[in-house]
Image 1 (tube, rainbow, N blue to C red):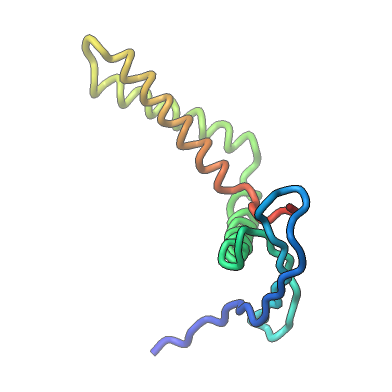
Image 2: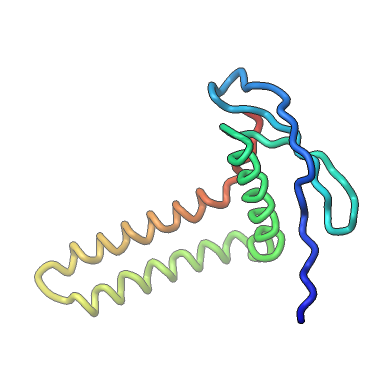
Length: 131
Protein backbone atom coordinates (compact mmCIF):
# COMPACT_ATOMS: atom_id res chain seq x y z
CA UNK A 1 0.00 0.00 0.00
CA UNK A 2 1.25 3.49 -0.86
CA UNK A 3 2.11 5.87 1.91
CA UNK A 4 0.07 9.06 1.72
CA UNK A 5 1.95 12.23 0.92
CA UNK A 6 1.88 14.76 3.74
CA UNK A 7 -0.23 17.83 3.00
CA UNK A 8 -0.79 21.23 4.46
CA UNK A 9 -3.61 21.25 6.98
CA UNK A 10 -5.62 24.22 8.21
CA UNK A 11 -5.74 23.77 11.98
CA UNK A 12 -7.33 27.06 13.07
CA UNK A 13 -9.22 29.94 11.46
CA UNK A 14 -10.01 33.24 13.09
CA UNK A 15 -12.13 36.10 11.78
CA UNK A 16 -10.12 39.34 11.96
CA UNK A 17 -12.36 42.04 10.48
CA UNK A 18 -14.79 42.99 7.77
CA UNK A 19 -13.42 44.68 4.69
CA UNK A 20 -13.78 48.44 4.58
CA UNK A 21 -13.29 48.71 0.81
CA UNK A 22 -15.24 45.68 -0.47
CA UNK A 23 -18.65 45.23 1.10
CA UNK A 24 -19.36 41.65 2.15
CA UNK A 25 -15.74 40.45 2.26
CA UNK A 26 -14.08 39.26 5.46
CA UNK A 27 -10.47 38.88 6.53
CA UNK A 28 -9.49 35.66 8.24
CA UNK A 29 -6.23 34.52 9.74
CA UNK A 30 -5.66 30.84 9.00
CA UNK A 31 -3.16 28.78 10.99
CA UNK A 32 -1.64 26.14 8.69
CA UNK A 33 0.45 23.12 9.63
CA UNK A 34 3.00 22.37 6.90
CA UNK A 35 4.13 18.84 5.96
CA UNK A 36 7.45 19.40 7.73
CA UNK A 37 5.61 20.15 11.00
CA UNK A 38 6.13 23.91 11.00
CA UNK A 39 3.18 26.20 11.62
CA UNK A 40 2.46 29.43 9.75
CA UNK A 41 -0.30 32.03 9.76
CA UNK A 42 -1.80 32.99 6.41
CA UNK A 43 -4.20 35.87 5.78
CA UNK A 44 -7.26 34.86 3.79
CA UNK A 45 -9.97 37.00 2.24
CA UNK A 46 -13.42 35.97 1.06
CA UNK A 47 -17.17 36.25 1.46
CA UNK A 48 -17.05 33.41 3.95
CA UNK A 49 -14.56 31.00 5.46
CA UNK A 50 -15.00 28.42 2.68
CA UNK A 51 -14.41 31.10 0.03
CA UNK A 52 -11.32 32.36 1.85
CA UNK A 53 -9.87 28.84 2.15
CA UNK A 54 -10.52 28.11 -1.53
CA UNK A 55 -8.67 31.31 -2.46
CA UNK A 56 -5.67 30.25 -0.37
CA UNK A 57 -5.62 26.81 -2.02
CA UNK A 58 -5.98 28.39 -5.49
CA UNK A 59 -3.05 30.73 -4.82
CA UNK A 60 -0.85 27.83 -3.69
CA UNK A 61 -1.66 25.88 -6.87
CA UNK A 62 -0.88 28.93 -9.02
CA UNK A 63 2.43 29.54 -7.23
CA UNK A 64 3.38 25.86 -7.61
CA UNK A 65 2.59 25.84 -11.35
CA UNK A 66 4.42 29.13 -11.87
CA UNK A 67 7.54 27.78 -10.20
CA UNK A 68 7.46 24.45 -12.07
CA UNK A 69 6.41 25.52 -15.58
CA UNK A 70 5.55 29.12 -16.34
CA UNK A 71 8.66 30.89 -15.07
CA UNK A 72 10.97 28.38 -16.75
CA UNK A 73 9.77 29.34 -20.24
CA UNK A 74 10.82 32.82 -21.43
CA UNK A 75 8.14 35.30 -22.52
CA UNK A 76 9.22 35.06 -26.16
CA UNK A 77 8.64 31.30 -25.96
CA UNK A 78 5.06 31.86 -24.77
CA UNK A 79 4.48 34.43 -27.54
CA UNK A 80 5.80 32.04 -30.20
CA UNK A 81 3.68 29.20 -28.78
CA UNK A 82 0.58 31.42 -28.85
CA UNK A 83 1.12 32.43 -32.49
CA UNK A 84 1.85 28.84 -33.51
CA UNK A 85 -1.35 27.75 -31.78
CA UNK A 86 -3.29 30.48 -33.57
CA UNK A 87 -1.78 29.44 -36.92
CA UNK A 88 -2.59 25.77 -36.28
CA UNK A 89 -6.16 26.60 -35.25
CA UNK A 90 -6.90 28.80 -38.25
CA UNK A 91 -5.22 26.52 -40.79
CA UNK A 92 -6.99 23.40 -39.51
CA UNK A 93 -10.35 25.20 -39.60
CA UNK A 94 -9.59 26.49 -43.11
CA UNK A 95 -8.80 23.02 -44.47
CA UNK A 96 -11.75 21.36 -42.74
CA UNK A 97 -14.37 24.00 -43.60
CA UNK A 98 -13.25 25.16 -47.01
CA UNK A 99 -16.31 26.58 -48.72
CA UNK A 100 -18.72 29.47 -48.75
CA UNK A 101 -18.48 30.34 -45.04
CA UNK A 102 -14.82 29.47 -44.40
CA UNK A 103 -14.00 33.08 -43.39
CA UNK A 104 -16.69 32.98 -40.72
CA UNK A 105 -15.35 29.71 -39.34
CA UNK A 106 -11.79 31.05 -39.25
CA UNK A 107 -12.85 34.20 -37.36
CA UNK A 108 -14.93 32.09 -34.96
CA UNK A 109 -11.96 29.78 -34.32
CA UNK A 110 -9.65 32.75 -33.72
CA UNK A 111 -12.19 34.23 -31.29
CA UNK A 112 -12.50 30.94 -29.43
CA UNK A 113 -8.69 30.68 -29.21
CA UNK A 114 -8.41 34.23 -27.81
CA UNK A 115 -11.20 33.64 -25.28
CA UNK A 116 -9.57 30.40 -24.13
CA UNK A 117 -6.23 32.18 -23.74
CA UNK A 118 -7.81 35.00 -21.71
CA UNK A 119 -9.66 32.50 -19.51
CA UNK A 120 -6.48 30.59 -18.71
CA UNK A 121 -4.62 33.84 -18.04
CA UNK A 122 -7.38 34.98 -15.69
CA UNK A 123 -7.25 31.66 -13.80
CA UNK A 124 -3.56 32.22 -13.11
CA UNK A 125 -4.17 35.57 -11.40
CA UNK A 126 -3.84 35.35 -7.63
CA UNK A 127 -7.24 35.66 -5.95
CA UNK A 128 -6.30 36.11 -2.29
CA UNK A 129 -5.53 39.82 -2.21
CA UNK A 130 -6.08 42.49 0.42
CA UNK A 131 -9.73 43.49 0.35
